[in-house]
Length: 398
Image (cartoon, rainbow, N blue to C red):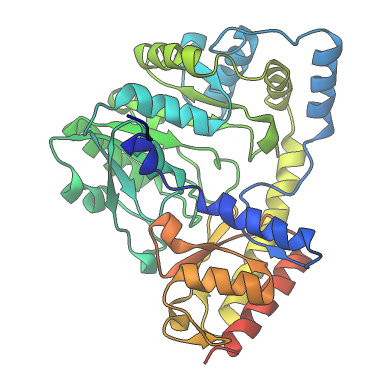
């Protein structure tokens, strides 16, 4: 019988990519669009990394690599984990994939059976629940308090743990809200995971983008028991402005990584060989570049926060990491612009894009319907212009 699978029909497209696509359509029509939607640094990949890729091409390093990644890259990643996170992994505990997104999907594919539950704190990155559903898992959403910057603790999570809980998705520093969990909070979560016996999939892709003296702590470093129950996911997309290079990696217990590698061998084989050699170079330097990027993001962060605080009807928490801010737009609900009623953040985002040519992502995509997400991975000038238009939009609501 012809038709599509129920699983495929149940998967929602990425809202962030949809907004970005519409913004590009408007730009193609000659419109001046301020884009707060896309989650990628607006910096060029550093020259030393680009040069390493060119050398790899010239040296003929363009063939298949081992599915798990080149041994030299996995050794370099192991060095990074030890240096930055106090985590000791051997190369056979590391898998290189085509982006951190594939690393996450690999993990869910080998951990979850049909009906297994996965704890997902709200707000969450748009792809987490969809990936869980794609492999037959059940997302269990855990509401977190906006007034506390959406931070959560073991006490927040514990009421949602059941006999079917298989994993928790942990993302700190966080997309979409920019929080960074404290060591104390992570220690409590680690104790809960060990006590209740569920895995932690720790997405640490934003670990280097952290502000105000906050400390990034990898939950896997908090003891032997939680180390054995954690799959750490990271990559070079955000830290080294390498989004298009598509290199992510995962580290964890040897048997889990072995199964993830077997899954990947049939799904996609190895990650791009040239990008692997570029990543090896990336992990061997770049401290000055990274410090400069973090300083600029920090300046944009505080600028955006101040502008939002001064705009009528908008409010936000000051992010501590990543490059996103969740902005509360509930005051616009029940009002109209140009005769069109705003009843949700989806309505708000759509009208703002069409009327003021400002692209934001509606909070429904993140499980937080009263907010929109803004990325400050854009210039200070564009941030100022974008919030000026948003304030103008708010002032025109009836």
